[in-house]
Image 1 (cartoon, rainbow, N blue to C red):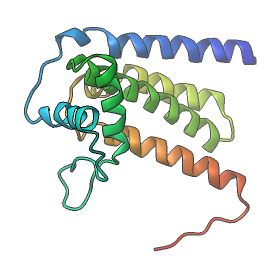
Image 2: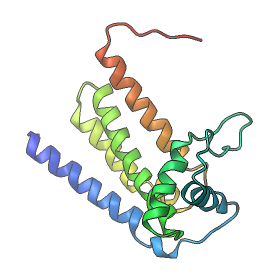
Image 3: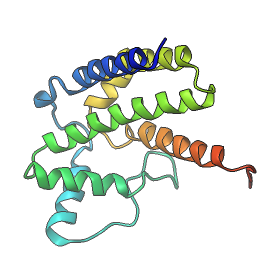
Image 4: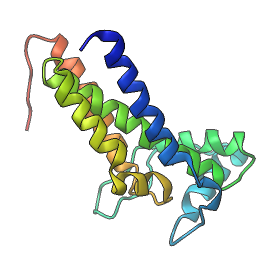
Length: 167
């Protein structure tokens, strides 16, 4: 498989994933304790109060990074406080998690195109991931942050000759 066809296949999967995650966003409703994100974005934008810890994810002592709230407040500002702002950021996080997982598998398998495309295809059409990218609830971006940190860490350690592990 040459480089041009490989890039075309990646682009095709990414366009399909974008469509599956972005369609029907206008029908997203506020369920359960979703109001936290809108309220935090409103406080950041109107009161200029910057939080140092993000929302809890249901496990004692574990929190989503505050960058999550900063991203939401940026989209909140663009969409003038609409709930669609949070839906868009969830869809974008879903798409970026697909991209980061694809690149992570591509790097970890020593640039094996077939295996990385297989993971890309599975994650593109995985109904649970599509569902997570559409429903607003603050534990759902955990997958995005987990994959992005793993990808960043693996690219950092690939450039280093020694890996230091501390317990």
